Length: 431
Image: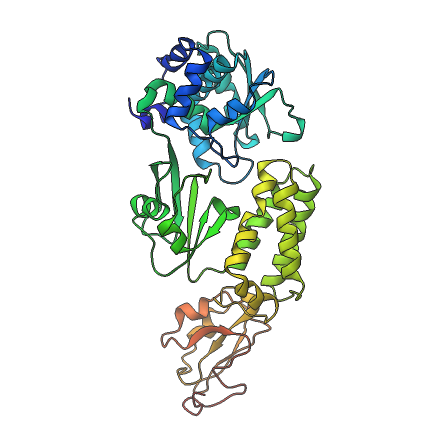
């Protein structure tokens, strides 16, 4: 049986055989840990570490519960797939850990948005032959502040991998299922060996990057920002995420950061001050930056808040929430400075720093733009160059789409490409 078959079995497969659990039961604790050591299995999710070392660190602790849960962030699509398609491997993985550490119970945390499958999970759990190991299913997030030394925490993908490893033995090679999106030839999702080269992952899954690339993000809108050069030389090993997003040269780094941190603030549980207040402040600062209200001291303040969030929050949601802000500030500080200090978006993406204007040397007064404008923001008449009232214009871009002469363009707010008063067609010279 292949690793993919083990990790992606049909959820309704009632003939699931708990071979891995039986293998674990036939081994001593030392033999089981040595097998983990030989296969070099690592923890998925934010807390990257080797499983055998993790167990070695807790050898003097009396573990009484195996807790398994999801990343507390927006990088959860693949984890959801495993939960929905192959909960049996998660159950078996938890039972195997229980066997190794001599623990008889575990807790599986299910995200709130998936509470609709609780009844199905409970039914499947009753069908599972876990040989005495008991699992409780709880809806919610894992709160690390409420966990003591007697509780061992595993990522849901790690539990499935442990099941696969004890089924395959030393032939096991750890993999991850990765989704690649953004500026690529064909967004896709596939399984890769965990230490694969990042660029090769993008090439093999999505057919490679498309156009000029500005950055690559490992882990959704709040993931780590790296350069294309980093991707060419870097290994995926150590990045406990399931999503890679490729940003083109036309992408605005500051707006991307604002979208990510705003989503963080909307989804924070609110219990942790550093996460709750840090996300709010970063969201406000980045909103000001893309809307032209940024202040020169904002960059230093962002760096300070982002670093504090990464060090002081109490769960993976907060610890990774500021990752994109932190890493992109180091790589693209000039782009942040352009927004905040020079009130300019280098990519032209942020509407606050751009206007839509009509080129005086190309307009032939056809009137197509006036017909499509819902807000009467365009002034003009036959044989006269048309003009756009920037205070009435919503920057929807419909006029750009209909202009037969490509005379309507988006430009920096401090530039001019046409007259500022009614001027006959052909009488305005390009400057």
